[in-house]
Every structure is written in structure tokens, then in C-alpha cells.
Image (cartoon, rainbow, N blue to C red; front, side):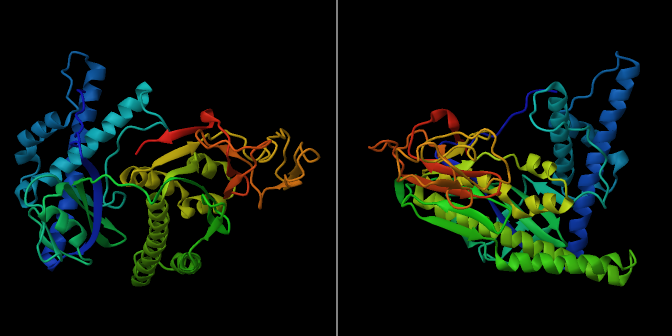
Amino acid sequence: MGARQKFEIPEGWVARGFRFEVEATTAEQQELIHQHFGARRFAHNWALAQVRANLDARAVDPAVPALGWSLPALRKAWNQAKQQVAPWWRECSKEAYSSGIADLVAALHNWSDSKAGRRAGRRVGFPRFKARHRDRGRVRFTTGAMRLEPDRRHLTLPVIGRLRSKENTRRLQRLVATGRARILSMTLSEHGGRLFVSVATIVCHTPRTPAEPDARCGIDLGIGHEWAVIAHDDDTIQRVAHPAPWAQTHMKRCRVARQRSRRIVGSRGHRQVSAKLAALDRRAANLRTDQVHLLTTILARRYGTIVVEDLDIAAMGRAMGRRAFRRSVARAGIGKVRPTLAYKTAQEGGRLLLAERWFASSKTHHGCGGYLADLKLSQRAWAGAALVALPSIPQFLDRPDVPPPVYTPDWPTLAGALGVALVVVALGLSLVVAGLVRKARPELLREEEA
């Protein structure tokens, strides 16, 4: 299949993405956008048909030459056949066809790596043909007239033309104008009936230092009443609840979903209720994204070291029997915090440490280090082994109030018998809790790379 070349970011630059909601300026432009979406699907399906036909032919006769799965090889085959298979190809940008073929190449490589055991995670199946009702409309542009207009209210894409941005683009336009940012690609996509342009860029990075470079904090996420519990370096505990509008939005969504179930599919009422449902889903996602970015930005700019638990979100969802519980894990958005912190801590000059996934934090006492192997879920508090020798240690380890420890590798050792200065990392999932004790255990944490 050939070696895949990756774009290397120059030294002193970092990759950043920007996303703007846009709208078409004319009805003809709206039709042209959907035509580009269809052209991408058409090129993807055509290339997939060629690959499957070649594989079937080689299964019958191994002497048949193999068709290359690289992007240049499939694009060359498309350019040779497009006049016969798609006489209308001039109506769309060549980037629409290249985008579909590039997505197929990535899917084929993922399938091949998964089959050979070179790809971690769940097994990846062979690519399937894309249909309009099943595939989300999108097209990626890497060449051509891609720019942000000086008025900071419009974006220009090849063939499609100028699109009006619903928000000001100055945060990116001023970087491009001064030469501190370079646009690599623009992806036009449709979500919930609205259009978005995602701009992939590299930005000149200026080294930064957190406000408290020697301070540390721990964060634990949950799906209960408290979305996050943060243990600050000054021994204070901050509990972050779910956004109030987020819960109200989901209550409205349940009601609208029941209304749509009573409508006839294809009717005007069904379309109207579906539009309401999409608007509620969009608002819930925006609320969660806003909270994730607000929390991670504050922590990354303040602390030099942030400790989070290495949670298997997919396994948590599968382990919960009821569908409502699985849905609560997905809605909480706890899987977005760790990757967001990974790139923000690197950008702000800090570091992110991951606590070992299988560390028995709930079974370890924060004061004496005692271990209770047969701890049950119904047992909410248990006593440590050093109650008589060290009366200052709390009598019981209460899960909701005094979580057990996770040890940081370079935490300063305190003078005294056990150094019982505790930084709580929190309760989260009512089953998994984590804290910070000032002891050295390097094997329990690892540094996360951005």
C-alpha cells in the first residue's frame, strides 16, 4: 500500500483548529454546496468499487495486477476515468473528489492495520459505500482560493465562493494577516441542518508559563450530580455541577422526541419536530463543549502539573446494563476533558499526568496506606489501621468526603510520621474516586503527550 507521509510541523509552530458557523448567501450557492457533498460521496463509492473489484479478481486469479491503495494511485485512476463515469465533474471543485478518495484511503489503511494487529482498539471493518441518508455531508479543501476576508465576516472556498460567517473571524484572521498562522485546509460540513467551516492551521507558538508553575491540582469527573471535583494546590476542593440549562435541555429533548414518535415519517409535522430536536441536540452539545473548554483553560493557565485518571470511557458505557446509564456516560462528555487538557497544558507550558487505570484508589486508605481487598460497593466508609498510633488520621475513610490516594511521582515528602497532608482529587463516579497524597510512587502515573 505504500508508506504514508505525515505533515511535519515546523519547529516553533503548533497545530490549531478553528471552527466557524457559516451560511450560504444565495439559493444557488446552497445547491452547489450539496452538490459538492454528493460529488465527494460519488468519488468515494467509485474508488471503493474499483478496490473491491480488484480484490475479487485477485481472489480468482492471483496474476491480476494489484490496484494501489495510495491517494496518488487512486486519484490517477479517477482522473483517467472521470470523463466517462462523471461527465459533470467540472461543475464541482477537484477537491471534492480528492476528499472522498482521501477518506477511502484512510479507511482502507485503518482496516488493513486492524486486520494485521497494528491498530489498537476495536476491530475496524472493511469500508462501506456511502449513502446520502447515512453519511454526514462534508468536503475538505486543501488547495485553491481558501482565505478569510478582511471584513472578518466572510470566508472564501474554491468554486463555492464567499460564505457569511455568523461570528467574527478576527481571532484567526489577524494571525494570518500578520504571518503568525498558516491555513492548511478548510472543511465544510453540515451538522443538524447548519453549515460549519473547520480551519486547520499551524500557528507560531510563543513559549508560555503557567501562573503557578510549581503547583499541582487533581481533577476527577463523574456522571452524577457533580460533573467534576477539583483538588487545588491550596488544599481547597472545588465541586463543579452540570450546567443547569444542560439538564433542562435534555428534559425538553425527551418531550420533543416523544412528539416526533407520534408523527408520520415524511410529513410536515415530522420535519418540524425533527428540526426542534436537532436544535436541542445542538444546544446541549454547545453547553457541554463550553464547559469543557472553560474548565480546562482555567486549569491549564494556572497549574504547572495536572493529574487526571486514565478512564476507559467506552468500557464504562458497555459495562452499564441500562441504556439510560450508557447514555449518561456519553452525555456527560467526560471523554473530552483528557485530550483537551493534553494539548492545552502543552500549549501553556505545563504537563498532564495520568493516574494508573487499575490503581485501587477506593481500597487504599489516604492516611495509613492500609489496603482493604474485599471492599464492597455498599460499604461507604471503612477504618484505617493506624487509628490508635495516629489519632490525627480520620477514623473512617468516607468515599463521598475523604477519597483515598493516588500518588504523584515528584510530590515533596513531608516531615512527620506519614506526611498526611492530603490533596483530594475527588469523587466522581461513585465507584471510582481519586486523591493526591504527598508520597512518591512513580509507577502509578505517566505523563500524557499532547
